[in-house]
Image (cartoon, rainbow, N blue to C red; front, side):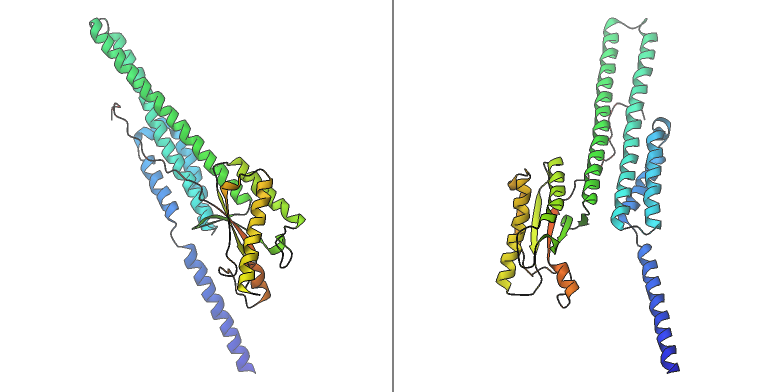
Length: 304
């Protein structure tokens, strides 16, 4: 009896040690988005022009990068780490762009002062040529300023959309952002939505109204209990029930694709009640939120 207890304690200690080792290794896995953000920030931070003209944006980028690194250190979900790193990298690139813009404006001002002193000795044709050059530089600077503002606005819109999806408890997958609605939407063996299910449907409809370009795929799933044909038909009817409910909330049905997969795509074992309950579900799949990567902008006409 004593030997059995000793062996049991040893097994528990070994299992705990392996779990800690596995968790430690997982936390040390590199995150490609974080590494990219760190490299971009380091490059931008080393640029003299950025430190001279765009320190505020650079400071924001540093704060966002520290936020992402803290999420990694705190072993947050890798999706959260990647999102925070993405935001940090975009602010670093905005700092780079804004410094280019401000340098343009400084060159224009300096050029005007130099021309004022020189115009006393320049012929009229030379003065006209100088004014034309200043106008070209001004036009380029205005265009660059608009581009910086547009990029900032687009980034904010993307982040707002991602936040709304996360508020719906959607998760990021290779297929897109997936929101899973469990079997509480329907009575057993039925495809009519329960009254309490409309709260979830209304939230999804609200998101689709806010983002009219976003499309949606609805997949119905069942457990393995019962006949294959019945399960396929039931999963199709349940997917369509959600689609019709969204249409009744004013969502264009052409934006929504419904399909039934029956018991063919389980997410858990069908050998126990808990697993079967997880398999009875409706998945709402939103296509990926576009994340435009801002790249370095090079514009000719600026003194290096």
